[in-house]
Image (cartoon, rainbow, N blue to C red; front, side, top):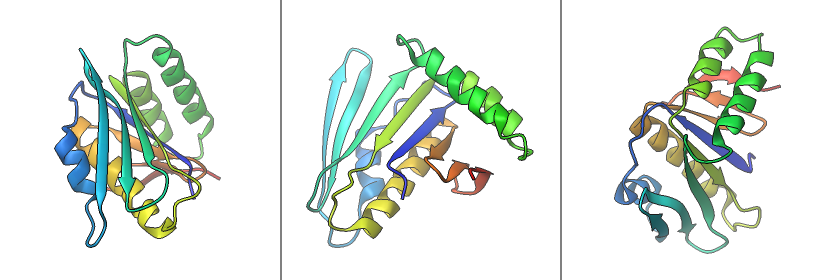
Length: 153
């Protein structure tokens, strides 16, 4: 179970709120979303799936203070994963990312299986919309279609 996910976006495209809500839809599950916005569009959302604490999704633009350092840190980490032939290419993509999305999953949700499926669906949706890839803590780095690019050990 990953508690944090990150989506490294290669474009400046701001994914639509409606698309985010739609990718979380599941039969019999009420999806709620609250988006905080500023002049640059939405930057934070709390997403609820049925009962329990919400998923917290944050959107960071590459020119925001501190984000470049965060992206360089992830690139340096990828450089250490030299056992994978995909690590070097992902390192370059991390450095060049135009946006970084972070997704924090709650630890006290009543339906863990639903929450895991929702996190994966959301990361895949964001990666597809922005030409990116995603990372799940202690699991690895994944393509927009969910295929494993680099497994973490």
